[in-house]
Image (cartoon, rainbow, N blue to C red; front, side, top):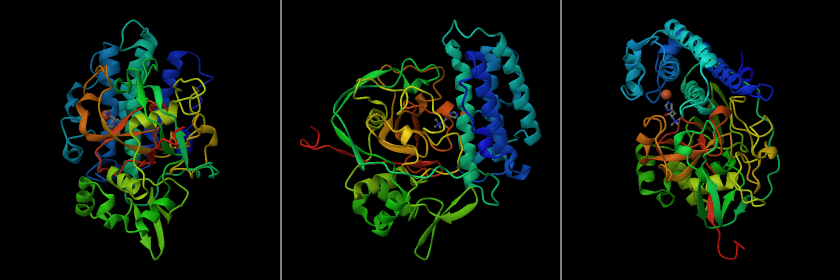
Length: 447
Ligand code: AVJ
Ligand code: FE
């Protein structure tokens, strides 16, 4: 099985909420299986980076969350394995400590997640999908589908950190194309941010609320490898003028000189992706940079990072109607022509590869390709309510985490929307993160 075998997401022929849930659960499991069957038992139990869990931890954790919410809570059934809850509670053990735990081995973990899944299909058949908030519209099932897909993206990042022969395979992304002007003007005024209606939206995306912005410019595309090389070549990493105080301290301490997984040979930069080393594609969005690098590049370029408000307005605002779309291209679910999602390819696509996915204002590749760092700290919107548990979002609110938007080539469409909010520490580079720039519009530019 290659990664493209798990990428099909057209569920438009599937009738009814129950059948859609079943199809999404199966899609997620196919992907988890692909990512864990691709390597041998040694690679499943070992730690490929202090930043990551052993793959076999992610697998059993996926099953344990599914058991907690769908078998026990929604289903009201007896526990499958109450004895292992503590091992797979992400708050009890740091990722770096997980390899030393008495974890289920690969065969046990596979058996466990299979047993849980069998019970979940039974619960799904017998549960009315309405009547209380946790289950309305199939929410709890949607939350668990997203949880599995989020861990699958994390496991994909573990694969990227793994050293050894390539084990994943996928076709190259579509070719790039024209994108029009380098920047797009987003008009000032109100727009609707967040959602109160998207059935599977998580608590931090809620509620829908009006936000007023000034006019601003946002880049039509994410910053590319070619553009980023110019920053490196101009001495960007050694010039404190471009870095924030925290960014400069970090770049010195961590000795950063280029994006993670890059290496220079003579005059050429190479990048290693999933075990394959090749010259960088100057037209692909840069990936595996931290927040501080994005911030420094933007300053060097005479710009800044967008706030998450600006990012979402550029993605959703339709000036013809004044309303906010579900996705940049409209209200329809992502199709292959719209965005580089679902681990269909193992790399960001060159800019201009998805003209059908551009926003009403003409901004490209907001969804898919690379997560985009914004300048915003992660906070609850006004009217935020914890649902259904504080450990999903609320415990991460505050100045320590920066918001990322849009999803990457490794995000599944079940787990990405224009309202979806991701977050991480500003020093992290193992996630599939890049960025685009923005700038204020001057008075005569904004008319
Ligand atoms: C939303 C991606 C930051 O992986 O830490 C997984 C998602 N929450 N299990 C993470 C999540 C609980 C979360 N992110
Ligand atoms: Fe989790």
